[in-house]
Image (cartoon, rainbow, N blue to C red; front, top):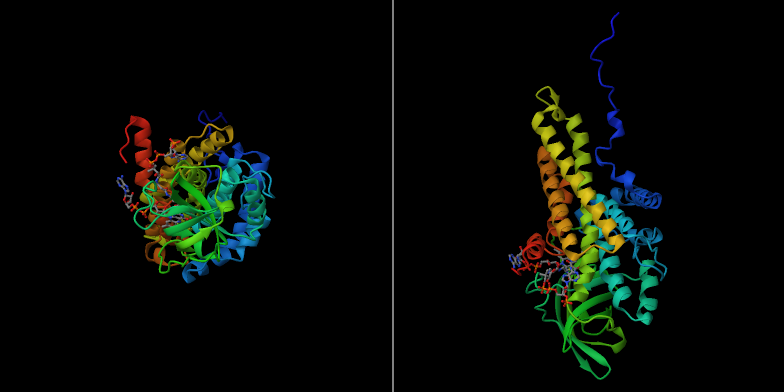
Length: 400
Ligand code: TGC
Ligand code: FAD
């Protein structure tokens, strides 16, 4: 028999390509980075996914997770010394990604503890402050929060009303902060206040007279995370609780750069969780005599999600490599936060729709991720703030 002149191209098994990692970002990771990702993934599968739906429905942060997060070294994981893990930026990104595959609220807890409370103490604190707070925060014995946003407008923190006046060796703090993650459960708050010299950071401990942190109830988003107001009524802060290493808006903004970096990775996890749900669901649901997945429109929508997740993954990995190389700038972080959160929110909304009526049930994760991502697109700089940051970078003109 004559040989077939057109033999079928040998097909590579489709199983060799991970639908949630089409361009094999994992193949570009070091062994340590893969180990970190795998250990956090196991924690999320074993400890977060079984409890998160109930926690979200009950509007309750699953606090039992804190010692487990600490045990894995996930609190202040990028800090060197002070009982912290000293991992690189890509590892921190992967930690955020896996945690947010579980829920944005759990990633938020770790973002705030690590990037917004431990980081400023590490970067701008005295040696005594670092020794006093960082090891206990790494062990999860102390919980921190970060007070920058004020009720009259968070996008423009330069227009800050909360102020601190010197009185002898101490400071007297007055004002209010709004929408503060971890506030009501925090043992300490890093609070930014206007002083005669400019904006400065203060460590305010729970129980200080005149300081209160009531929880904000009735949220439809980040329900498994604690969000609070902070009030300061003539709060006396001892002189050794001011962060000595920074004066000016650059202080809080550089903390935001750390946290926004983690968010750019984190939201990939939320999007992956939504796409995974749909890959399973569209295979098993039969409509018009065929699986939902066997419709061109459905495949186009799934393909578009995979395309957007892939570009977000490549952006995050390059951002992480730049951060580790010391070349990352705030505008890079703005672009990644904007692109990746928009990607995840659009995907979560589309997945919610493709589930039909079932999409409004807590039984399927997309609506929970979608509602969470409505906060994530607002906090750490709204989408507009990041667009204007890129615009300013491109044109050299300030449109804020
Ligand atoms: P601008 O003149 O641009 O900057 C003042 C100084 O800061 C420096 N700088 C930065 N440094 C580090 N990282 C950044 N991202 C920085 N952006 C600016 C800048 O070089 C300058 O330094 P210097 O030495 O010249 O003084 O300040 P601006 O008043 O024009 O404001 C710019 C703008 C609008 C981008 C900024 O105000 C902003 O980012 N607004 C958004 C505020 C925001 O994101 N708030 C977030 C609150 S925290 C939060 O949401 C936590 S949610 C956590 C969770 O649960 O996960
Ligand atoms: P505003 O600043 O009032 O903005 C309102 C609208 O105006 C937005 O759409 C914005 O994009 C738009 N806008 C603003 N300026 C311009 C402009 N120049 N041109 C065009 N449009 C503009 N803050 C903390 O300090 N610590 C925390 O831990 C923290 N956790 C949070 C947790 C949650 C769940 C949420 C929802 C928020 C949290 N925030 C926290 C606050 C968050 O950072 C702010 O909500 C955010 O920065 C926006 O501020 P705002 O809500 O006051 O909105």
